[in-house]
Image (cartoon, rainbow, N blue to C red; front, side, top):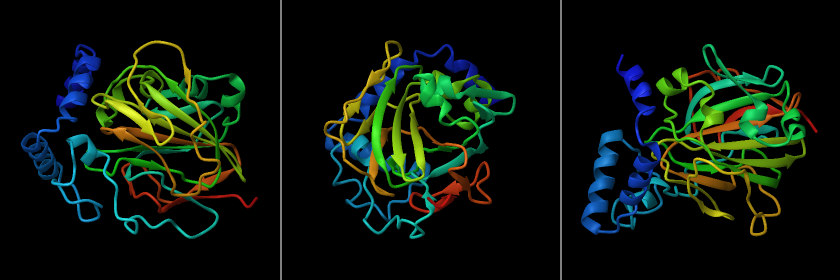
Length: 285
């Protein structure tokens, strides 16, 4: 009952105003305030800080700097099998499986289309018809950096303005087309096994989405799809390379074309994954 109430309340909340407020609070540099926020957050969500690269809370200038924290270099080993698809994030599987024609499962009774999710020309969307997808939810306590699941090269990145509903389990179950309604950054890549796409879905309280080459992208409710320049981007990425990060938590959707690979047995809803571990395998090139 409380979960449903939270979902319905979101329709009334000033979602962009609240997200802007959280954005400002998360960037307060006053030492006492930011240390208080970080310490309380770690306790409230039982955040694992053993692998954090810097000292907590002292080495972080703001709460947001802690939220997008780096880990020690050996904290997330990358699976050594050359055919592995590795998890791009730490998180919980919301859903994973086949894309049926152009329809992706969101929750019981709720689907959305490739065209709506990617908000791009039909040819791009058709590349993933009858392919496969994995939707991974990043909870507040998770490590919030996003990495490449396969070797490849980035060929396009597009920011799609949209809403800012929460992406927690209750909201996903009750808001139709949630992932195609919310703002998102879509990164298109080419690999030796074909194309793949990474969709960074924004959400309530996610003040911005960032990549190493674009800098910070702030939320916009309306407007045209924006092509993100790749001029400063890498020529190639390898499994485990950094692709971006959420300034506050959200969801990542990984898309593969038909026949490109398969998910690991046991990759079921509510199963947890860690960046770098195998979540599937590609077909031999």
